[in-house]
Length: 133
Image (cartoon, rainbow, N blue to C red; front, side, top):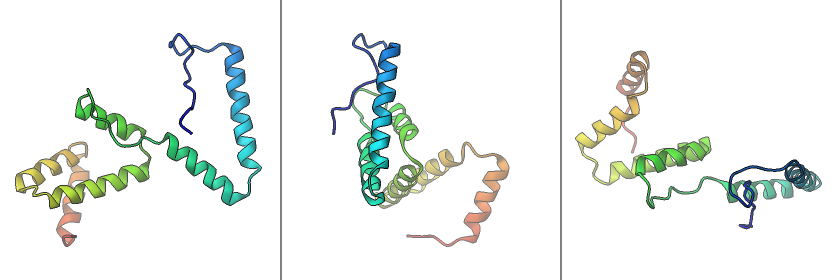
């Protein structure tokens, strides 16, 4: 299923003629009609397959700044992907020997975009909770 077409023309400038736009809309309509004609479990399987094919995927670190690549990946990821990776990566960082200083830097980065009131609520929540492993 990896031979999906790009939305750019042969010149690579992203422009499309009216006929090309009409053809793309026609093809999208055919796809939606085909999925709608399926039994619900089959339609779900088709949609999940399509979403999996076009999802963000893991970050690629080749020839890019790691922060920029991570930002681009996060922009394309679903909420569920973000939440899952956040939790799994956080646990791995803790198990990998992230010391007190590293944990403090991580916490500082996580809290940086919060207002003072939101930070206070986080600290209040942390004081009332027990550590999870």
